[in-house]
Image 1 (cartoon, rainbow, N blue to C red):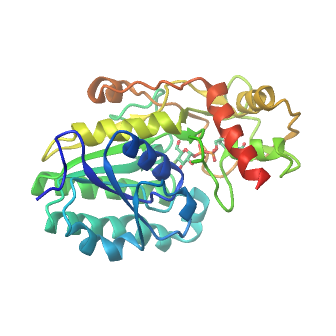
Image 2: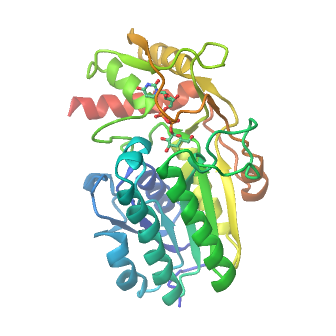
Amino acid sequence: MSSSTSDSKLNVVVTGGAGYVGSVCAARLLESGHQVTVVDDLSTGHRDAVPSGATFVEGDVAEVADSLLADGYDGVLHFAGKSLVGESMQVPDKYWHGNVVTTLRLLDAMRRHRTPRLVFSSTAATYGEPATIPITEAAATNPTNTYGATKLAVDHLISSYATAHGLAAVSLRYFNVAGAYGQFGERHTSETHLIPIVLQVAAGQRDQVQIFGGDYPTPDGTAIRDYIHVVDLADAHEAALLRATAGQHRIYNLGNGTGFSVKQVIETCRAVTGHEIPAVVASRRAGDPAVLVSSSERAQAELGWTPRLADLANIVSDAWKFTQEHTAR
Ligand code: UFG
């Protein structure tokens, strides 16, 4: 029995809602009038990133899902998980447990309590080294790291539960998420992502940025990625939640369909911040493909979603405001 007030206003659980993408999504869902309960063990998330207006349950999803879902929810948006590629190669058990075992427990609890909808945070890392660009959902899935392998395993899990048990499920495969939404942004304890690192140099928290590889087969020799604003990404989650269909597991890539090189990103950060941002070319990072650019045609056609904040300077500008506020603290 669901506790929603109308067809379009849902009562949902957001796992990982104290993290970067989860907190932005929780905030946007609340603004749209949905009821949100955030579950997060705060292992990488921050208590003050849980939007006011959300109910907060501190705990491990695998442990709390069963008792929580017994209260009756319309759906779960599952962001909680482990997401560092390098770490996944060093400590794979953390990724198989944290991503696969935890999601299996969540799915079993959803099945037991008849929670009808699931939106899952998947990743472009499920594809591995692409044979063609842009990457469509029909591309082969050959992950090159444990992180991508665990996320792909979860996608398979979800497919079989949707078919067998009537779950309405959507996996969203993110490309490079960036930007911020007011007080909600990216603040990892040990940052590995390009845009926050470059902005930390601009803010004086680092001396320089290392460009991982200057000899890729790209126009300027540096790797190309598809950067998507976290607000556009969050809005695709709401569309996916509302359009999910019982018994089906749909998969959508989320990107802007445009690639920017590492050098182009650094140039944009220089223009937005007005800081010099010293950069040096270093060796390639293991496992990094040369080019990852998404086709978002399926998401646009079937979710009725269009990225509205695709301009890289806007994305960087929102991230820069967030960096400055958090540096000043
Ligand atoms: N890079 C640098 N210097 C840095 C950090 C990154 O040159 O200090 C380069 C990387 O080598 C890469 C690009 O900047 O070419 C982007 O790197 P990120 O670490 O920001 O992002 P990734 O493309 O490696 O990974 C992101 C997500 C993954 C996801 C992947 C799929 O973090 O979870 O996109 O596209 F799997």
